[in-house]
Length: 139
Ligand SMILES: [Zn+2]
Ligand SMILES: [Zn+2]
Ligand SMILES: [Zn+2]
Image 1: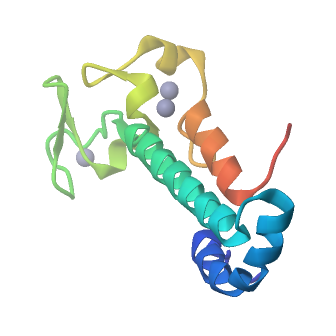
Image 2: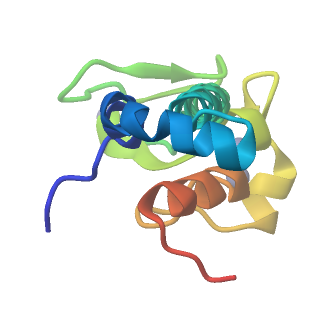
């Protein structure tokens, strides 16, 4: 499969070529095609920036269980909630910092209410946004 097209860059480039139709589109729509495409590019850029902000908010937060090394971890120990020490081997899965974590603790609805795992998006928001990014849709 080919690389995904940067539609904003492609659009901005297209604006340069579209200029020759501006007189015609002025006649038909009272708007210049090049302005319309430029505005479209601006809008896509704003949407992409908003999407990036949302994804930054819904960032992965690692959940660990006790590793069972009993203080003799092969890698740097990680202190969890001041309650126990674990290490990378105790890593279970990522949850969503925005949806699943309250005051640095995994929310009980998260622990018992929905699934997390390697191939599952960390939350419904991330699932939706990554679906939009790849263009797949189950709707
Ligand atoms: Zn350990
Ligand atoms: Zn989330
Ligand atoms: Zn969760």
